[in-house]
Image (cartoon, rainbow, N blue to C red; front, side, top):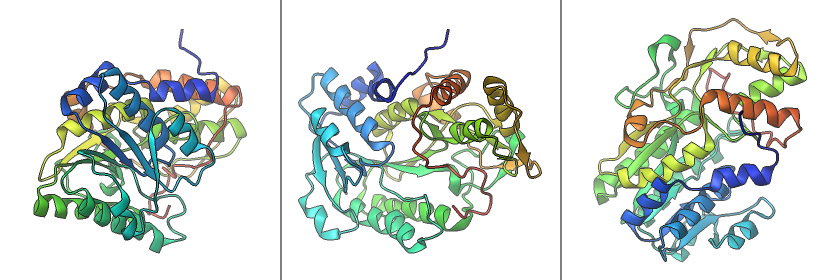
Length: 342
């Protein structure tokens, strides 16, 4: 019987509960952990997971969350969890002098949603902020959150792009994400900063993600686009664990790690699953293409193990969440976009 996640408190508890491997990694590394961009949609639970892993390891390390913290209650919630909170505009270069040193840095800052409307802000967040951060934390090891969107579209039967495949970003969002990597790569080469490019697609935490997008459309009788007919997915809790443990894999020149689940999933079959769960007949639009943004994460699985939450379990969780009216963040992934205009 699959566990049912009944409310956000239970969801956040799952996302922020560290594994033994998380704690052991931080114990081996030692030192403070600083999270840049900790106020976004994945930052709070990842930050709390780091704090709990530090505590479980018996360390006295500081866990420091840095962000503008524009969402109500996030900063206070982190402080209650024992995290040090620093309010900071990462676009203001002068503010970096106020940030504490830390040997371990998780770089989560970035912009996607609505990026086609404010391309200037997208480039500033995804290219200028990395330059400021890489300069300030040149002596740290840095896990840089990136995206599989910088790869070319490939056939569903290909198994996805590996870390050795060339990049081919489509659209300004993906181009700006490649810029983020290149900026960190430059500083890694010049200052020997150990980095890891954490190329993620797509994370699901029940309030957002590809599966949530598809399930909500099926539930609401809205058409599901088939133009991009396949996708990868991974539970956000597994992402959080991989991110923490990736600190130990940082290198100069930077290491690249694709982060997603092992399966290539069909949009149509996923929609049909949710149709059965919701007793709805899915509505589809567009012609199915055999090309999609897909990543091969076998390197990640070899180094860090398979995701702990299986795809079928994740699908059941999403269906249960929508059936009992769980809150959504209303931040669609736009996974169906093929022209790069998010």
